[in-house]
Each structure stands twice: as structure tokens, then as C-alpha cells.
Length: 332
Ligand code: NAD
Ligand code: TDX
Image: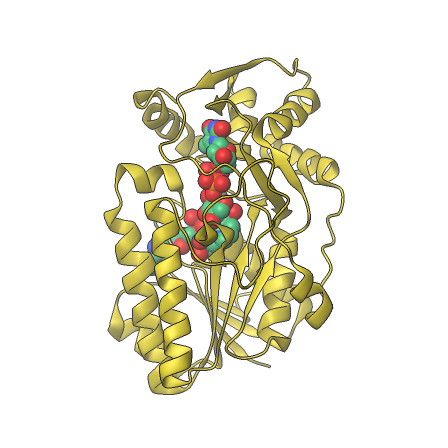
């Protein structure tokens, strides 16, 4: 039984990973989370207190981080500022949490020799053209576009440097766009679902032809656990489920499932520097670690996610009005 320190464990994917670990291992978990606007106490609410402990603290606080890292066998680092649109409006917290926070954790794992797994994103590679058959692999050069993705790229490079220079026992995973329960209403899929549930309209940026490669958060969690358990130290693994869709197509599925016409949407101002397309080649994770996604059927996963938001208004309603007011102020 390991003692895992999970940073950002009260967020969308971190809390999914905590539930996944409880269900599939004997490990005990300490969540280190500063409970920003993106965290949810309820996402961890019903979990066994004998196996999950929650510490409210910041990953940039070297004292807290050192004391916790010293008492754990492995760190899984999800904590981050994660929304591209917010990073355009206010980049400072992204540099602070994503770069300085990761640096603070790396220094602690260096002192204590602790196993470290760093959670990252496919956005570090920049974007692909719509008609380019290429997909991202572990050796694709970094070329991030936004303040968010450049701070994630920076944090990945710090991890790589700490592996090479100090020999820390670390791995990295870069995953594609996640969907599922407990995702904040600022993000694309929950925003559209909750707009429709609120009697408002769906909002598509630009021409809506931008492509994302969608994966259910449960499949991201199983990929992270596979790398933590069996990944080669010092290596990077891409996590993706071969599910590229244009934003317009995803929105059409949501609109149809919720009884609306496919064209019942507003085209709104585009995101500055908006990446065109992301696509992951997860061959390495599949072949070397035997990982397989469980959610092969995106339509079914999306329908479950719509039902979840319909049944969990208490989760999303408190943040909804302020989130929409911020979008409206930008013409989005
Ligand atoms: P999220 O925004 O839902 O949650 C982030 C969590 O980190 C929150 O609980 C927040 O309180 C916590 N946090 C933020 N700053 C902190 C700090 N300074 N100290 C401690 N805790 C802090 O994010 P998410 O979508 O669950 O993403 C989790 C990780 O996965 C991130 O590293 C992100 O870059 C990565 N990722 C996300 C996606 C996606 O589609 N959402 C895809 C690939 C990778
Ligand atoms: O209202 C919207 N309308 C719209 O067309 C919103 C909020 C978004 N979009 C578009 C922008 C993107 O092309 O939908 C796509 C998805 O947008 P987001 O949910 O903001 O995700 P993205 O910017 O692709 O980044 C996500 O995936 C990679 C996560 O937020 C990141 O944390 C992760 O690293």
C-alpha cells in the first residue's frame, strides 16, 4: 500500500484520479489543493476518510510541500491553472502555479528521492493544420501558443531537466481534451450543456471548425495509473483515445441529445491565438504499457455527461452566472 500525494485532487481530473485509485488499488491518498474557483469539495465529499486526507495548501508553498513530500511514496501532480481563456485575461496565476508550483515540487522530490508523476497536456506541442494527417507523438517538438500552454510546456521542461541533471525518478504524461462529470462550467462541453439547461444558447468560437481529441476523464485516470505503476522512469507517455471531433460536431451532438436543432447556436468572437487542431498518437502507452480506453463510444459518454449535469445543478449553478458574465464582457 503506497502513500500517494495528489496535488490538485479537488479539481475535475484530480478528483477523478482519486476515485480511480481508491477503486483499483489499496493506496492511501493525501490531496494537496488550494481550493481555487476550479475546485469542488463535493467531488471528494463521499470518499472513505480512512484512505483520503485533504490538505488545503498551495503547491508554491515550499514548507508545506516539503513536509508532505517527505511523508509520501509518490507524488502525482495535477494542480494547475487550466483554462486558456483565463490565461489570456490574466496570465500571472498561470506562471505562479504552473511554473513555480512545479519547480517547488521538483525541489522537494529531489531532496527526498520521491517518485514523481507530472500531468501535462497535448497543448504543449502547439497545433496542427486541419488537413495535416500528422498526430502528436512523444518526440514532437514543443511549440505552445497560449499563456496556459506555455506555462505547461515550461513545467514539462523543468521536469525533463530535473530528470537529466539530478536523476529524479519522474515520468510525464500529456493528455488530450477531457470530458466527464465535475468539469467546471467555464470549459466547452459543460458550458454548452449548462447554457441549454439554463434556457440560454450554445456559443461556438470563430468558425467552429477547430478540432479537439476527446477522452473521458476515467480513461485519463487509468492511463496515469498505468504510467505511475509501470512507466519507464524519465520517460513521457501521450494519452489519447483516437477521438478527433470539430467543436461544431461536438456541439451538434449535444444539441441533438438535448432536443434542439443542430443549428440552434451563436457564433461568437474567436479566442486569440486559437489552436486549430490537436491529435494524439497514444501507440506507446498502448503497446508498452498495455493501456486501453474503456469509453470507446463518445456519443454514449457525452449522453451520460449531459445526464450528470442535469442531475447535479448544485455543482454548476453557483459558478454559472459569474462565468457567463465574464464571457459576455468579451463578446463570447
Ligand atoms: P481544474 O482546473 O479542474 O483543477 C485544478 C485543481 O488544481 C483545482 O482543484 C485547483 O484548486 C488546484 N490548484 C490550482 N492552483 C493550485 C495551487 N497553486 N496549489 C494547489 N492547488 C491548486 O483542472 P483539470 O482540468 O482537472 O486539470 C488537471 C491537470 O490536468 C492540469 O495539470 C491540466 O493541465 C491537465 N490536463 C487537463 C486537461 C483537460 O482537458 N482538462 C487535458 C490534459 C491535461
Ligand atoms: O464557449 C466556448 N466555445 C468554444 O467554441 C468554449 C468555452 C470553448 N470553445 C472552443 C475552444 C476550443 O477549441 O472549444 C474548444 C475546447 O475549449 P476548452 O474547453 O476551453 O478547452 P481547450 O482550450 O481545448 O483546453 C482543454 O484541453 C486541454 C483544457 O481546458 C486544458 O486544461 C487542457 O490542457
